[in-house]
Picture 1 (cartoon, rainbow, N blue to C red):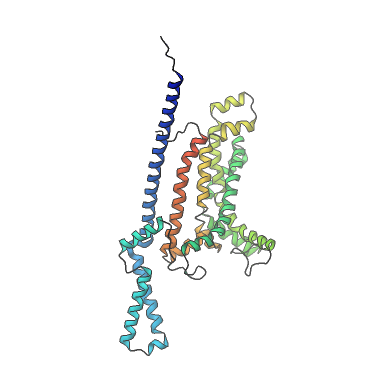
Picture 2: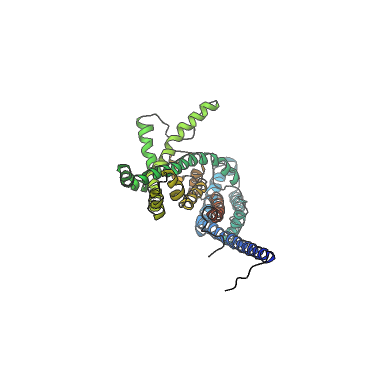
Length: 374
């Protein structure tokens, strides 16, 4: 059987062809993936707009509220009572028409939804419609930026602690499968079915109402303490209860999930071979147990990071925490569509970018994954 040797030029040409083929494959995959994710974002945001508007029912509610508010304001104004009834009635109708025009209620529903969608996709979030008191009638982006630091503080401190503590403890349990602590975590994992705000109510009753050692809610005392150190300590004191409720709610289930993954990979044949060779336990965990689970761990961490944006809606409301979750909760109750759509579109963009980048991260941490391969 004859063996045909390739010349250097043929070898170079083959490598160039392979690089071109890889570049075209990856480029095609990137374009298709981005278009698919963008289409998903468009559909998701449009459905959010339709649901937030209840198919036009919210428009009717807002029209009735506008009519009632303006009618009462003009009718109860002493200076307006001196006007002729016909003139006063015309003034009410003109004022109502101007207010409906300002709110965009004079535009057909389909056109309004298209405008909401177009503005949302371009991050032109507009102004809040019904948010009052501390939020005022502000630009949606300003409301979101004002509430974002409080949410990042609460969600970041609780969720990051939960993530790293769960992995550390799950690794320890996987080494001692079947011992008392392992059985205890398995037995307590159903407690995560209880939402964090429920734990929050009990924590408030115990530590704020009975023992009176922690505040009922809020981010700082009113008035806030002066000085950086005093302010930071007071903020930390207010952070303990809401952060603890978020951690307790998911603690045992999170450990149980990671412990299950580690147990699955720790029973593989190559792990048993490494143990038989006498490799140290730390090397076995880092090379043969943690590394195969990296895609799952990275996915959970990436999704955790973007969920920091949404906040804990009911938990923030229970603790009067001035974050994005509480703002979204109030916006839903007030039918403030710009706030709802603004929060949704930013989360949708973050989620789409995360899903897109995770494909490349998987290819970096797992050599079996190829970009653009079936």
